[in-house]
Length: 188
Image (cartoon, rainbow, N blue to C red; front, side, top):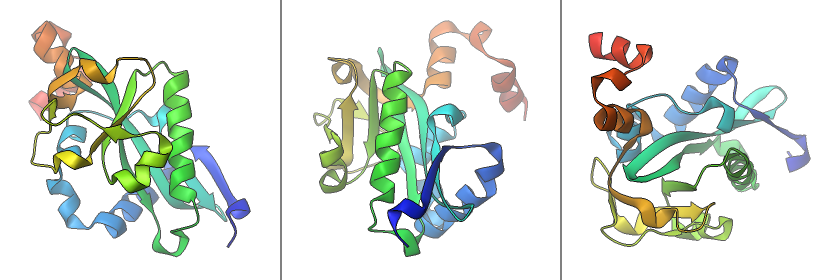
């Protein structure tokens, strides 16, 4: 397999089952206990800013972006990024991240943050967020909180607990800010 055999596309609903299978394979059942997963439980990811890699029409990797808030700051949370084992170490994951960052920048996102390894994400522009500036809803190693600024000083505006942006709006604006989807979740 050579990288030229890989096609990169925006994520579509038809990819959901394959993406879930890749995430289960990559992260196992423990993924549900992770801080980033807890944030993603607060609302949907941005499908238009999420991408898949296909080989022979089969999803072999994916990356998702989710709107988040922390204090007055707004950003996108990158993840999960997962690549099937047979396709690792070919640059597919890094290419998906670059595609997602370009899409985020074109969409006007101020920053992208993640919980990840600096040696992997550093060459893609991610830097450590100053210790104590943000707090995740579950414990994480503060050395793994990374961000890339797409708008100058955007990371400095991120402060306090990170949550899904939909939950931040409800907290700021009160019950009237709830959307039909949020109300349906509250009822369920």
